[in-house]
Amino acid sequence: EPEVTQTPSHQVTQMGQEVILRCVPISNHLYFYWYRQILGQKVEFLVSFYNNEISEKSEIFDDQFSVERPDGSNFTLKIRSTKLEDSAMYFCASRQSRDGLSYEQYFGPGTRLTVT
Amino acid sequence: AQTVTQSQPEMSVQEAETVTLSCTYDTSESDYYLFWYKQPPSRQMILVIRQEAYKQQNATENRFSVNFQKAAKSFSLKISDSQLGDAAMYFCAYRSANGGATNKLIFGTGTLLAVQP
Image (cartoon, rainbow over all chains, first blue to last red; front, top):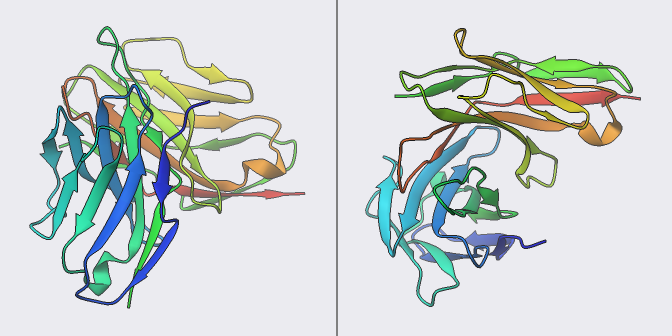
């Protein structure tokens, strides 16, 4: 069964460093998402991406964040200058749309980002 | 803006027994989807069940079923014949059907389910 993959599974970085989190969505999916979950808290929407552009972003997704789909398969989240409060689990998700019907977002296993 | 509320931070159930997890939501939309996601200790998000708001019939998936009360904006999850592998955090989530290219998921705060042998 196709699945969303994410690398790395765990990333440790120092405050102020740039990190890139990578995701490979399911191949025929058209909509892509990043969510964040701070330990012990709920999952929060960061950004959605469709047709090579951001379709919506949350208040969390400030100028330090960017997303890209560089090669038609990977979907990346970049944090330019990490802060301690960026420590969280980051989930990538993708969704298919066919004939106007689509429901599920399929989630990747997540990348645990630790900022020290 | 839509909100999702899970009022039970923790629940416990005996193996083979039935447990119901509560979820309420607030929206002014008439067309939307509701989901329950399971998050085991591995923290992978796994879809358990979904419900389309336009459907009156409650969704079922094997031992998992929902009680969808649209007027009350309530969407509870019933787990029958609970198994040790059901122990996890369960998140209720809402998605608009009208969002076009976005259709982000809005999550509740989760209910941590423990299954006692």
